[in-house]
Image 1 (cartoon, rainbow, N blue to C red):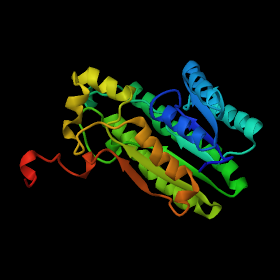
Image 2 (image 1 turned 120 degrees about the vertical axis):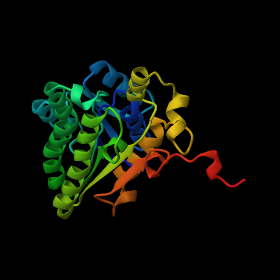
Image 3 (image 1 turned 45 degrees about the vertical axis):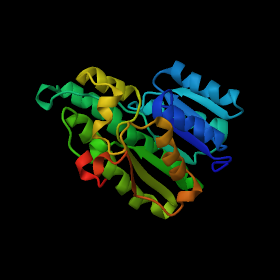
Image 4 (image 1 turned 90 degrees about the vertical axis):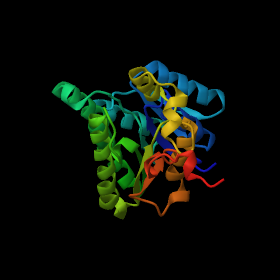
Length: 260
């Protein structure tokens, strides 16, 4: 029970990495606040947690709308009285050449990925300051670390989250608030399904550039988030955790690179 009696807000917890993290947090004793723009998906996650004896509420939530964040904070405090953990996980994805991208698409993606993360920080940090501590985990991407084709906007938003987290870590360390970033690579989520539809690739083809030879699973990412949320990482802030099977470490190894 590494999160016993702690309260965690997880955005985008209706599916994928957010959902698996919500399940794992609940098993570790946390009160889990499940938010998602799709209320049905959020409800399904909460019901699954409750079936297995966990504590959870769900809240419909557009992370780019400030009043939605105010509602999430108020309901969390009404139900559990505190906020110990924030996992800024929700986001959107766009695959499109830069020169074909509209300004409207730029604003829409930045409002969700970047402004949504900013609003979470803005409204959760004051609560954590009063409590003298908390852990914030922001979900970036390897697209925020390295260049790729067709994901300029997405990469820009995730790169901004990377440096935003470092500033937050420095600014609020005196209040015992820790802020860290995770950088998932190719993980079996709806975003990867979308990528496969765009470039007509399957999981086997997508895994060819991954040194470990496969795409990741959401629960593998969730375990890193758990470490950062728990007191096991009490001396860790402003750090970066890459979860990509080695993809960002360099070019994918060829058979000829290995000794027989």
